[in-house]
Length: 294
Ligand SMILES: [Zn+2]
Image (cartoon, rainbow, N blue to C red; front, side, top):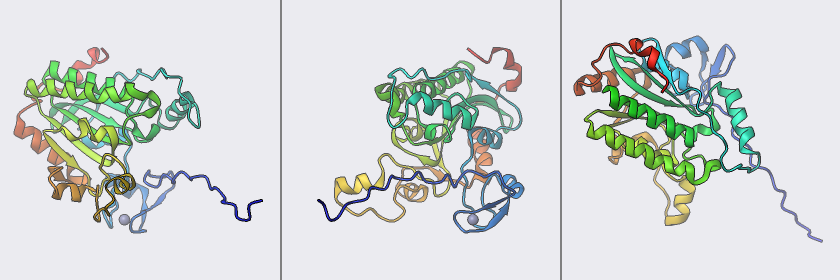
């Protein structure tokens, strides 16, 4: 009989602190300030005291970037669970839960609309849908968005917010890295700009492919950006990692990013960059409404 028994505690999922809760008041997880939720919405979910950036949903993100209405594309695409994958739960039930939480069929919204009067193709990732993971649907929707942009001569903006490739789709999810990167190479050959916006968190296969391929790579302050987690790296290289490792500011200092911009100034910065490139100067997107879904 063993005298000492290790009690195994299941790993608790961290409470999703960064989403804006339903109540009237929100407590900032960084400085503890109690903020009226309308004030928080007015400041694009940035803490008015310490500038902590709360996570935005894909819909809120599009709203923060576009001038007004936008046309959504391929909203009907959904994963078919090609591997019939089950870990602690069947992948099918994770997909259903994602649909219920976010109202989306997968972890990205792709849309066309005007930003500062310039028509752009934008893809915004949704962290609430299985951690914003990149599966076949995310890969296909982003690829189609880029191809549409090439055909219509629009600049592309991708807002990443993702835990990386979706392991429940195995190698099929990894193939999306090459597929999207290939489409971005064609965009580059068509001499159209791509702005990558990296938000908290941008990790794994998303960082290792399209998130780092922007003509301009912009991050939000203090966003976690990396490939593998810090513990895995420490164990592999057997060295202590420096403070602030894998945060936007550290990456900017080490040449991995071009800009770290407060969300409240993000749109103006994007517009300045787009004007500089001269791309997207077409008629407004609304005229394209009838031909949105390919
Ligand atoms: Zn705060």
